[in-house]
Amino acid sequence: MRLFGHHLLERGLVTVPQLVEALDNQRRLTPPIGHVARDAGALTVQQIYQVMNRQRQTGERFLDTAVALGFIPESEVAPLLTRQLASRPQLGEILSQAGVVSSAVILRELRDFQRAGSPPPPVS
Image (cartoon, rainbow, N blue to C red):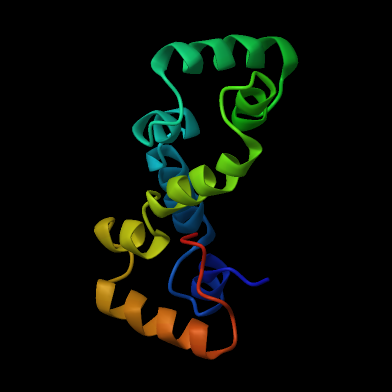
């Protein structure tokens, strides 16, 4: 699967360092899954701390640990991850705000990217 960032690179609209910085900013600005779960009412702050303590011991991923502890059902994992993804800033927005590529160019390239048969980017 081709990603939107690769498309922008291939078109010469961003450099590798610009893309790496934007992706790092995107990762940094994405809310941690524990915050998403708390905001969704799926976990309490106390449960989040218990999950984090167990995570340190086991090395498991956060939601896997929350399920193992019985705090959330397995059926809640995908909706929480979807919520986290939806709250992540879009790559084009980050590049535009940094002055790397204008929002008009981002919109045009996104249309071209989608027209080329690639699925809409998962915001990355």
